[in-house]
Each structure stands twice: as C-alpha cells, then as structure tokens.
Length: 461
Image (cartoon, rainbow, N blue to C red; front, side, top):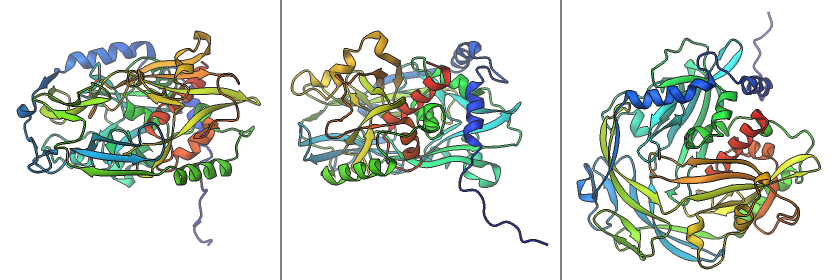
C-alpha cells in the first residue's frame, strides 16, 4: 500500500478558469441583473434607517478622555479618535498635525462563494452603513470588526461568520491582511478573505447570490458596491489581473526593487499625540475641524438600522470636506495594458509606502500652492479617453459622505511618458494582482481601481 500523498500543488491552477466562467455569466442562478436595483430598493424599504447629526455631548458611551482629550468609548474597544503628528522629507508639507482614527482590531471582510450549475456565485449583503451617501450598499458576506463578531456591543450574531472562523466549513481562495486609508486610519488592517463552501447555505433576506459578471456590471454604477467588497474582489485574479502572458515594462524583480527603494528613500515619522490642543484644529460643540475648512472634520451621529446586529447606536465619524478624485492613467505598451502607480507615503501606513493610484486627492484642498502631479491631466481628459468612471463611497462605518470619482484614463506619451517621473512606475494589472496576494503593498484606493479594471475586462468595456 502506497503512503498517502504529503505534497500538494502550490497554487490552484483551476481558479482563474472558474473565475472567468463566473465573469462570463451575466445572469445569476438566483437573481437577474435587471432585477437587482428592485431587490436593493426592497431591502431599503424593509428596514427602518435613520442617521442624524448630533452634538458630541449627545454621544452615548463616548467621551473626551481626561488629559489627552482623545475621543474614546467606555468599553475600551471599537476605536478612538486621537491626534497624529507627521513629519516627512518629501512633498510640499513637511510637518502637519491631524486627528486620526486608531482601531487596533483586525476585522474580517469576507465573501462566501458557492457553485450553482457549475458557476461560482458570490454571497453579497445589502448592508447599511451610517456614512454611506445612500445608506444601503452591496457589502461582503461578512464585514465585521472583532468587537462585532465577539459581541462586545451585546448585539445579535454576525450572519455567516462561522464560514470564516471555522476552517472545517470552507476552503480558502484568498486570505490576506490589507491596509485601510492611511490618511485617516493609524495602522489599520483587515483580513480580506474569499472562501468556498459546498454545503447548503440558508439564505437570509438581506443577502443575494451574484456571479462575478453581475458584480462587474454593478461596479460600473454609482455607489452600489461598497469599499469593503471592492478590496476583497481585488484579491482575486480575474479580468486584466489574471495574468500578463506577454510580459511587462518592468520585471517583477525590478518592480519589487523599485518599491524597496521608495520605502528606503522616503522618511516618514508618525507620532500619536493628544487630540486636545491639536495645532490647527478647533473642537466645537458639533465638530473638530480646521479654521480654513480643508481636508476633513470629526462629527457625531445617532443611527437607527433595523437590519444591523445592534438596532440603535451613536458614534463619531470622519467627514471629508469635498469629493475626491482617484484615477489611474493607463497606456497600452507593446500590446499590454499598464497603469501608472505612485509610491504613496501616508501617516497611518504600517510600512511607510504603498502603491497608490496615479492621482488620489480632493482637488478643493489644492486651490493654492502646488497641484498634485497628473491631477490636471485627469481633470482635462476628453470623454473618449475615459475608459472607466463611477462614483464610489469609502468605508461607511467610519467615514461620512466620503466619495471619490474613480477613473481610468487613457493617456498618451505627451500626457504620461513611458519614462515615469520619480515616485511613479508603470505596472500591469497582473503585477498589482500578484502584489495584492501580500500585505501592505497596494493601498485601498488602488485596490478599488484594480477591481474596476477587472470589471472593465469582464464586461468588455
């Protein structure tokens, strides 16, 4: 009798083909794409949702800590709003102070997949977040902090979380720690997971099964697919991110060397400091903000949500002052699509630098002084240059009305030369997908655009 095999393949070579079949399926086994908007509207009508701005002294369970002035929860969990002092040797501003959200817990962002009629379907949730501009958006199967799924809030169970915490229930297709917004979070990571089950899965009313092709179509619509779904989808090799058989302008080794060089070159120091007396920021009854009205402010809200684990709560939120622009410039080089990434240093990153989009900013913050590189190129793009455009909200659980116009813009040599300027590099979507398999290489805005590139390839746009 032969001994049992101890070795297994290092990768699932069938996954790309399975994802391609799901991407080609423009209709699902359970919900037609043309019926999705009606289904989502029905879930909005089925539950009572309300978000109201309140004064800080109306927060329940939250208070400004004696001494530091940090905004904290009485449980010692969830998150805190603190101060941050950032010093850098690159850029127009070399030193600045700002509020920052400190949330040390690692949450789970997980999508459960299952085959129906030989096609992978993704279990997606109609989830209310208080900061979403339209409240209800399409979220992963599970979108929960550790405090949520361990029930620190004494609320209901997080549905389907057992598929992500019990390895016997499912097989892992993707599982990686990824950063969140480095300008607004301090050292925040979430576990991005895609797991597959062959078991029967009871379907809750607020959930639906969709193919990758259906989700790709929804990614072309404004404020439908939430940030957490987009970052998880970016961890899968689909569309343009599946492979680059023809090669790339820079080899993977050259790309990794360039990233290492940028991390070594850029010197960023980020020190947590008390929120009280933060230079340049004033605390009022309803907000903590700058006198010039730029960047963002901290506010407080009261929330009612009939479909959440807790039906009523209050919390602080970070509210940006203006709509962002987040864009990749794209070029076809020797027949292969490339996008221009920037090595971005943000105060909240764990590893100083991550790859971000070509442009990532709020234009209203730059009415005076030096404009971000390539911003005017993106804003001046002709309609025929815009390959992708949609309005997407950022993380609605911590940010209020945080929206960015996400774009992929076709550029020529005059707009964006192959010899990229310092701090920028041309990479393929496949190279970004390879980097997303590892932690803290590609920032959350670039991961959204990577999911959008996949959606463009799947839908043929």
